[in-house]
Image 1: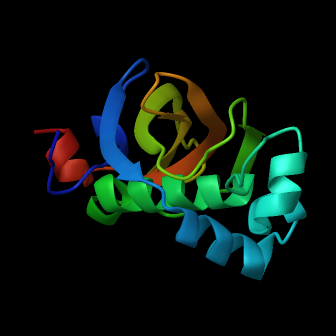
Image 2: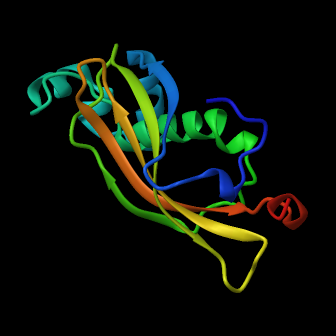
Length: 156
């Protein structure tokens, strides 16, 4: 679904927005982990092979970062986003490996127009990344603030 600008009013509970897919390379897994999460199973082939994972896997924070990029490119850059007060839950039920293709879906779970600031509302959502085997690799639950459609456009 392509829109020029997403406002608070454009979201509804149960809405699912497909944000595309991205294939992860081993080089980017190791580069990210080397800089931000250098645990041996992220950066060292021998250590990873001897670990419970059996091979190098992406840092969970790398997975979250890739998902964030897809949400920004596929939704937030064309929205009235005012940022986020935070996340409620992050889970990595399946490791992300080199060659995996992640498909990300944004699911609206709750909405609340602000009573104190009528120019905005809060959208609660779940972001879900699924690999090419249909396995959920990451789930993020959180909230975002979005601007409301201008009042004259809401009343028309």
